[in-house]
Length: 376
Image 1 (tube, rainbow, N blue to C red):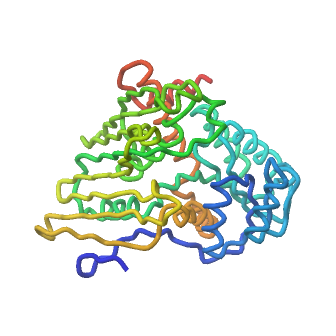
Image 2 (image 1 turned 90 degrees about the vertical axis):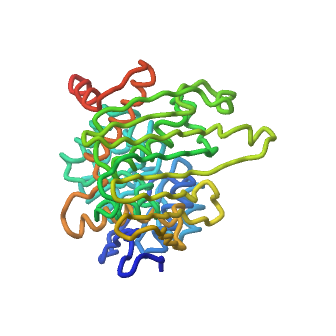
Image 3 (image 1 turned 135 degrees about the horizontal axis):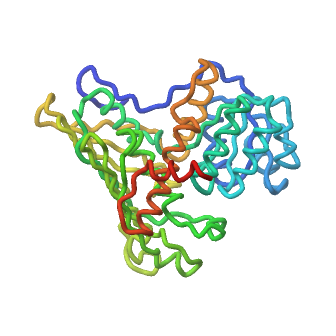
């Protein structure tokens, strides 16, 4: 177990449901589903019954690997399967809204859906999906899984318990070269809706909703060889009503490491409070090597000493049990989960605000995005 001050144990793991009998059906058979979701679900003993994908052959292959008994010929066929209780949707965002609208109309026998982030192509489309599922009586959880990275969750625990005092400044410094997906070319997106959305949601998880955001972006030289985009390297600053500030620089160029130079890859974060300081690292860039994220922290109450708890769990794939576990616990106890669709709309609005801020070179209040959507 982690090394902590006497009597203190950090709450860094997800709460698992007592009832693991809900029958899960999966739409999508790509990397996130096959190598993250299904691995984590199997570790937790969840009951995955069926799968469907654009390619039946790929779905069958993943079904064999994870011992899933039913392979449906299409996602519509899977939605119609009345033996299922919960659906896990892991498809590109420009395909996801169609599926979620179909579920709202034809899947009323279902109890809940876990959907990927970004929930849709923008805030307006996401709001439409959330409202349809709510009217259909189907709970929606969005897979903002960085909230379940072990170091992010541990820092959240320190903040909730007041160990760091009032938040003053938080930063995330990402120097990493992600594996981009082919579907991004259709959207012209690189970083804000794919990577930065994790960090923006993490700041919301730690501190609540910001009032406004400043953002500046430029194309990533490497990705620009494949398709035009604006949101390659992204810098942004969030302002909170209580005076706290948060900032991130999401550098997906990270130097010419792929072009022959040495590499300096990593993600580091830092949270400064009036009573303490926490610093951490994210192990994800070293995937598939299992590299746990870390947290080190110090507080006025404990004096001139650093605490460095460590664990064996990693973000990819272990943390992917978190959003699904949260959904199942919400069903079990009949309450809205923290990652409910309504909450995720605030993250979607924040992402859209970053696009506007970068395009128009000004600070953008989050309410501006919400107000603009009311007329659409």
